[in-house]
Image 1 (cartoon, one colour):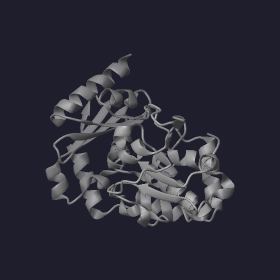
Image 2 (spheres, one colour):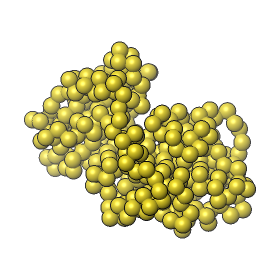
Image 3 (tube, helix red, strand yellow):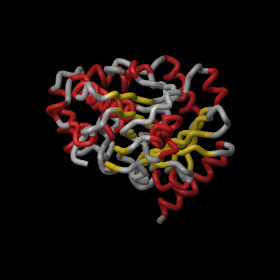
Length: 317
């Protein structure tokens, strides 16, 4: 696939979808694609399907057009799925993927199984949003599209600090800044600013934390009861695992929170020696070498025991 424009010839209807519990890269890349089609191809009907997005991203153009209900039974000419490593992560929007005449997957997860008709997957790239930047082309990126892409890049690079950040990433960010975006406000409002409740649950998570494997792994868990006590939702727990990761001397960080059905959402981060994507894939999850996740059953202490054993094997290989 050379660019997005080549995929839109003779197409009348397009559905865009991303992974469940959409994060900054998922929201930013999907809205960038939506705005690109809506702006430059007004003759095409385009719909975007995502689960409810965090409020911090609702300033992005056409975020109010996101459909969180999948009760529409339309079969689309083209379904573009973004930032999604497998069909199971599409949630209810999977039906638009399954009934579309053609499907495209744009993603940067190393665990992606190339499940679409056409796949544009580059695990070395910082974010799906950076891939969308390349596929749209600089001349077609408006200020509103630039805001979407910048949000995605900022969030999936941890403010350009992760190892996936390349010279190309920074050059793309420079182009986006020249489009007139308020880049410092975007960073403050979507990456750094936290509510009082978010700061309190972060504090609780840090108090709950323990060191494993002689201090090489740090881990913590937040139960449903604690989430209810601090009045936070899963989307408010963003950033906790990254705060754990920067603890001096650790090689990996693990964060668990309890889902409504009693399972546990697992987020893992590595400082380089551990391949957490490999571990996540063993538990039907996925991600990147240094950032990955899964959903697991059991008591949190048993889950942490299993994960630490797998990390220990990697560290001693």
